[in-house]
Image (cartoon, rainbow, N blue to C red; front, side, top):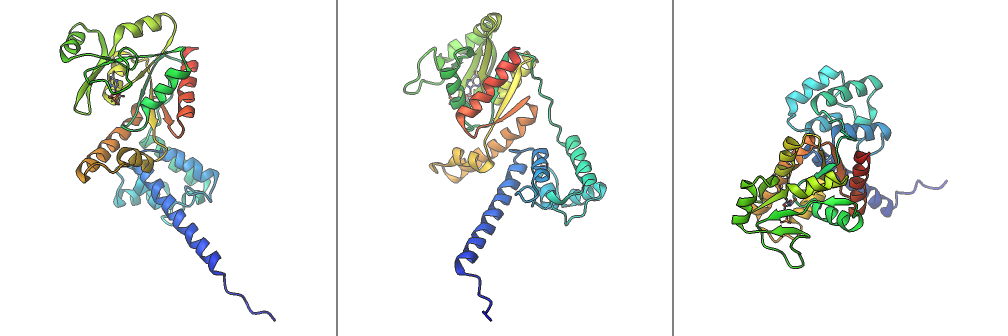
Length: 302
Ligand code: 5GP
């Protein structure tokens, strides 16, 4: 009789590699939950759809702990309240447990109803380095039917930037005048450096002409537009993962540890603002993200 053959080295190495990959994917998912790159509702939906997925194999205890502002004590109370055993994995919840968890998530992390067809004024914002500018540039090039607002700024032009196309480059005195004459829909100091603002008149004219208007501005500006024009549609651009954003923010490694830490702290605060927005778009691919923005503009123009 043939002897049982030992598992070949290659298989063992492949299995070990797979286990490491899975651990990494789980750790990355936890970070995405903590930093709110994904909503817990989306993770639960994926876990339910595929129990063998990274989401499905996540322990309920790890899932809850990864959510903002939930510590071990609170986690245990929640599990008790929902009647879920701490050994359960997300993909292995019973129907009643799933429904209870999903209701609890909706109460604690409300997902805003999209306002859809209410406005032709779109605002594109998101965390630093997520690629808003690149998405807006793509739309400028491919969708001339959309009026892309040209901001005024006090920062000097970069090589290749054209006055009146990329920005209106103005000095401090002129920016003060724009504010004093109420010519800006919103304005803010960005990155503690220069001032940026959205000229009001071209937007009013474009809207009056029946065009869709897109503003690519920072978070402070987006909040001001929300106040001034409550019907505006606010779009938040998300990185595909938290790790990807970190790469884009500090990837070149040219900054010191302190600057790196400061940027990451800022990114976390910025990501937390996504709940204030009507639509979330993931910038995995620039053309696809731009197409989603354009799609929103056509549905809101109806
Ligand atoms: P940059 O100087 O790299 O072109 O832009 C820096 C930041 O300023 C970007 O986050 C951009 O979204 C923001 N920004 C550009 N124009 C405006 C504006 O008119 N208002 C506000 N609030 N932010 C702007």
